Length: 427
Ligand code: GDP
Ligand code: IMO
Ligand code: MG
Image (tube, rainbow, N blue to C red; front, side, top):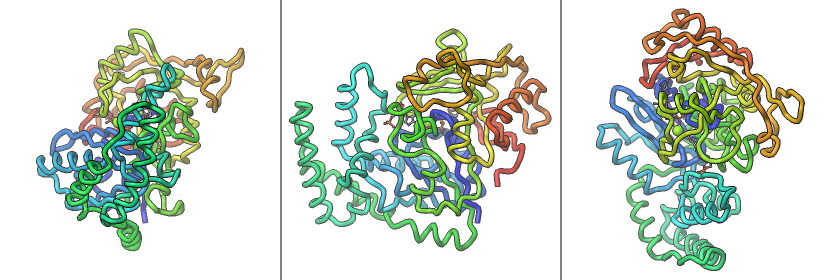
């Protein structure tokens, strides 16, 4: 019965990997449903520290089946490298399955991602350069190649030779670059196919059987709601939906199957790449958050932009997803801070607003309206019970909870799996 979605509620990197790893201890199935290897999910557990890009963070559970859903775009090279790394750390990867409907990232997607970004000049999105946008564009344009296509060499060649010719036309005629060798791509992907074939299949029967047994199924979100192409800060977004709704589309589970949707927020905001971040701090405080919390991208190593908690964006994200509860991570980052701020509204064209504008042009003009909170200036990293948190920390969290309008279930006070306070059960 219980399908639980774990969703990034801000601009990504909220700590979804840590929360999924924790919840996966009791899960039977864990499904990644969106994005690709633009995601970087950090997991620190008794087996070691891992940075996962494609493999679901539930792979560490001794019994869970780990599924890569149809909504993920898979770079087979990256997946094989990740599987090898996990196997070298004695992680059992035999329970990893890839949907035959998942689209593949091809060499021309990587090249086009780079060329398109360059062509955007000063308006570059700051993509991860992993070919994500071009691969999702091909999916919708019906010229994508799917994981299942790799299992039929003849059909794969037919698709590839047709699509790659179109891509080479764009690469040479629009961008003036050297065309890619279709034969090389074919033989390279046939090698990947040999390695991945035992893992590629229709995952819907696996999910149906799990539903029939009343298994616990976790949907592992990637990216964050504010990067959603419909509801995020378009065009500074990613190319698939990181929301609870995206969880249905990207896995094949019906909307009525999902019983809880846990939104993961950090106690402040970060963003990597371009686009508005209304509470961004360009001062010493921003630097201090970045250094204390080591806010550098898991996938690209880029410095993350840091700012105070934005409750306007947070409430918007809670509504888009219909969160049944939230997890607040990285509370410990504020352990030494004398004071914190929460953005409770924006000043826009002489007025105070409490909604998240749809246009980037408006967002860029928004000035945050802050409430100030005294710090607790004592360590929280060893606290495991909500009532043991300093009163100032509880006041800070409870103001966030009130502004978001969804109950806090988990509070994370460190990277380790057990550095978590369970305030209310997630399911
Ligand atoms: P994800 O993409 O949402 O899985 O998040 P990332 O792994 O990209 O970034 C989150 C970072 O925060 C990782 O380095 C985690 O180890 C770390 N982290 C997660 N929860 C906490 C926490 O409560 N406190 C601290 N200090 N670090 C945390
Ligand atoms: P996780 O799952 C943070 C950002 C990129 C860029 C924009 C578009 O670790 O939270 P893309 O390569 O997707 O076309 O880039 O989206 N982005 C992320 N930022 N965390 C992520 O994933 C991200 N995945 C994409 O930085 O601004
Ligand atoms: Mg990340």
